[in-house]
Length: 309
Length: 309
Image 1 (cartoon, chains in turn blue, brown):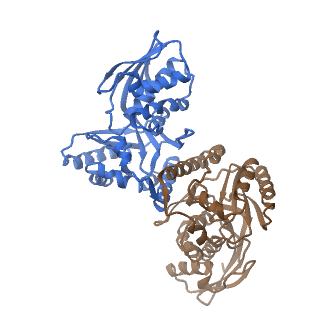
Image 2 (spheres, helix red, strand yellow):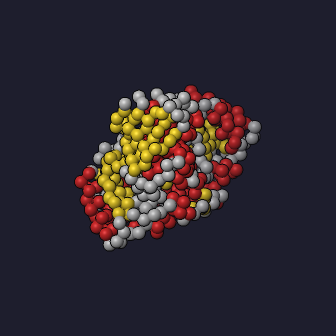
Image 3 (spheres, chains in turn cyan, red):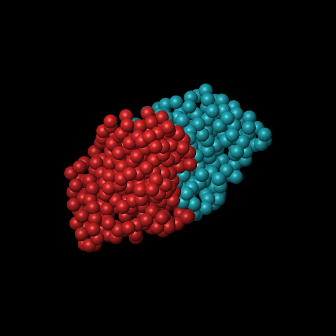
């Protein structure tokens, strides 16, 4: 195999009560990436379409993540990468994760798969570190493994795949405003009230239980974030109206996707997810801010190969 | 049915990373209770053996919990309660929970079962409130429902039953020192560091996953408490030595049972749990403090009826 074309899906991290540990993978929404063997060693980003992003290997998340992999597994040949961005950078649905995970996945395939998908996470987070300052794994884990993923420990990168109830759909509204992860991090307090933390971990534990038992009602009751959302919601225009619109249309729950500005809502069934989308759109039109709307199933498989030669 | 004799098991709450939300039920270790219909209305505690506890209905956790039930479901007859305590009060393995849950379970049976086991929790916590100042549900939920139980929300008493892997055994060492729940609460800080909270909820979510997938290794990796144990461990003599002894003998993990002073260790298999007990005993002998040792399976059913007439 000399060339591989892959689909690198978008993802939602910081899933409500699962701040910094929980993520899930989207279907259909994502980037395409071509990775090609070259005789010249190293990594070159030869084309980026759809977004204005740096082509320099050390300034591009795909380049940095791929370079980390090659450092651990040197190769006698090199790689060219072409990226067709379907995900907007800074949207909060894992744009940098799709590129970071895509690069290491594609290179790994062309190298004859020396690493498992789980092992690739440690390289992909180097791209995340470049993008946001912290090597967080919640998005790249979801992109590489699919479904819901849990980062038990970010230091040891102990990642656990969780089940995805088959009727779970997500609605995403992306307000086209700029909101840097660094800025979204800055509004968080270093300390939180113990009582709130207890509420949060009670909800997260219950959410995990709901995923295992396909208990949509429990999933809905657990999608509460009493720690981060109260601070970050102020950064997102129309947050309360969007949340109310989602709930009133039958969503199980909703929250901030990643560090925003996108909002996600989870629903049981596609019809409800579409209806939730209509209501969120209606609620957001008043803001006069441009936006995009996505409806997606949870993608249980993560990155997939489109073609190879 | 005019009289019922029941077994009210001990329980472990604050299971490591599951502080204030997670509990599990023990087998064989517990109290016996006889509840008997009487023509005279109300509740009378007629006998307590094994512990020096108040017989006055309003000063006894069984009396208070039972009274709360009768307030919600008035009865034309009354109840006599005899308690044979097998659990030491103040040991940290749910002595008050066994009596509180036992009383409401027994009375409910004699009333023809107007309430489900889950519904009985809201009455049993009144006994807990008398005992410790807070109406916490983590012990009584485990006693009434059996297995592992999760308090998603203590305000709405949203309780979720979690699975108990069949090879899971617990070793408990109870140092015979007095440690009041109120005192153990006092050493906790009102605020905690967000990073620690994230670690804690990552571990709890992983622990729940491990319970669903029978992944003993994951259960072991997740049994870490970075929030409460660092403060409360100082109140328990020989804490570090006990923990080390448990780990070195193959325990999956260990921690403080309830608010202490008992320590629990979870193991895969009875043989390991026994070995862990021997090592903990050995480590604790140096302290010259009296202690008791218990080995138990997780009890998946909770309170059970011994006999009735």
